[in-house]
Image (cartoon, rainbow, N blue to C red; front, side):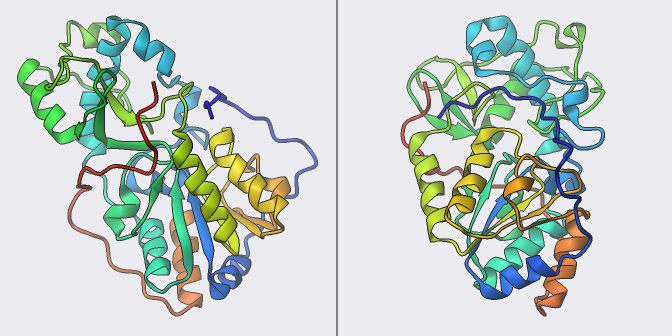
Length: 315
């Protein structure tokens, strides 16, 4: 399915208000079989901004689309200059209490799986296993010509060598890992090609306007089918890539629970929306279940390169 570049959604006036009672979330977890679907809001407490929350990046930043990226060298130069600078901060992000709580729920056998719309790897860094990265991961790069998948850290090393002295000061970091830079700051930034075939390298993430690999979508649908309930954490569900799983669960009569400060596009399908901050709320829920949440990790994100459930790279 191709992601529509939907950037905004206006809540209808008849949506129920959110609640400040997280007990329904605790009840669902007590029953087990909970499938987690997480979005950018889960990572804001790790210093990575979201798209649509208060102060979200979409108020000042339009994400790169697949069509723009593949259209010409200029767009790729701007993207890689901004992304290279942003990676220095993005790659040092650490899991927060919300990520650690999700990992703890998994260790105690309460989850049917974790699907994340995020590309930051923080679920895995917190200890969650079998995470499905719906939109890919910034920790990997893929060649659009030969399909080779490589390490983002290795690419960062090559870009450093090709752009000695590139030290602009970014105004802000964005959820997709790039930084706000002017065209003047981008300058004549040099983009490096695939080391294997000389082709165009792209982060192994699903850009707006690009297709989520069909095998990955079908894997997620199977997880929804096998789950007892769906717990949405920090996603506005504005784009169909996540909303479709909420609709699937609702059609099957499975409870949908949402933890998100603001209204979401999936609220009409939800049993409840808990309008509270994610880290404290999930820590509270863990306490109600007598599940300890580990202390913060001391190392940055460092995920081994692997092949996600998807099939061939999207063309």
